[in-house]
Image (tube, rainbow, N blue to C red; front, side, top):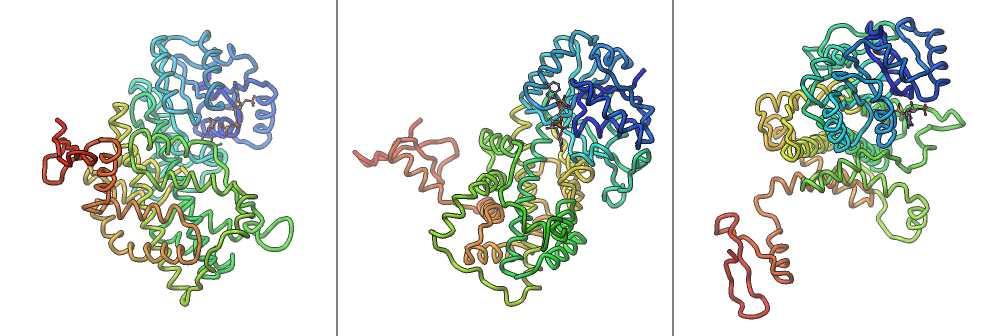
Length: 499
Ligand code: NBP
């Protein structure tokens, strides 16, 4: 009998099946098109040491019956309707107590609905975020599981086995897994984060932070290139150097590698031949939408999504570049000083990005009745996933020291970093503005930082305007919160307490 089943043999399903087989799990695999299953198994026989642990099936019923009961079945199909359809097709063959684990990028509200509906039919449903793309799925992803604790207890050993591992002392990811040779030991980057849709919500916030992080890195690259005048080889060296310090992370490391890549189709570098129009699959938009719904000021997150939208207006931008005026970029007198300035700027803005992600999760747990352990979430993001970064250790420590921390910016460690870094951040945003170089994420993160630390904001004027044209009432600084007043701007010019 198989220990576990994987349904859906796309990029993620194929790689996760091999990861399971490498860890000793006999894995039943199924794809709606049988030829996909056959092709996968043929390829595995040729080059995968763990292939004898993979069992392929053409019929859904025989796939389900081959799995030990109570069954564990991982769904890795396209999110949305295909997931509902797949569950519907599976149900006639399942027994009470079986567990379905949706590893796709499902919307958390779909996961809440599916968990509720399946619970009524005595099927346990886990919505598990899986991050790390193809390589993560193959050699160790970050796994954020949500669902009932009963279901988690049944999948926990498997999830801990196949997850990415970090060095318990340094918190750095342990690399070196190869086909048939998984990493043994280390701290696994997998955890149960909460009931029903919690795992998919946390994965969505992960992706939202990923959007901001990528945008911040792209803007820093742009400033180095245009203000510093560095060529691609030097830019690659700068990012490689940054990857040795506080900014050490997967995204900074791959940026260095990308910038070094020659164009395979001709002269020069590949980076200069790639069209500057950024795509997206929607999880960043969901995260920004959730921030708007929950009233969370995640402005850098929204900016990162908008920046991708704006980048796709390629023809309009080309036309506008010839019609709208702006300054020429300033040239840095001291390129090394610019590099140091931007390193601090990027690190400060990155702290802000994570602060916004954690604030979003704080609001979501109130809304959906979850109880997130933020230190654990930071810890399972240290390996396997796209936003893995050394400074997640510091975030984990901050939440361990103060689990109810209102905002990451207030953690002592980060207050110190920001106090040392904010001048460099301001200079960079000012240099960009004076040079006509767009830095929406760096600038909006700075606006967030300055707004958050402002004892007073000009929102008093907004309240007065709202009261003037719409009688929406305002609170007074010299009266308790919750007491509202209206001023009769158009008639008696008297103030009335509106209670
Ligand atoms: P792929 O596009 O590579 O594969 C999609 C899979 O879904 C295929 O097996 C396909 O079957 C199956 N499928 C579809 Br499409 N419609 C189906 C239906 N109606 N019924 C049954 N199966 C159906 O996607 P992937 O990259 O493997 O992603 C799988 C899930 O994991 C998605 O939810 C994705 O968002 C998520 N995810 C992806 C990544 C990543 O980096 N790629 C990372 C994390 C999460 P077929 O072969 O017969 O068409």
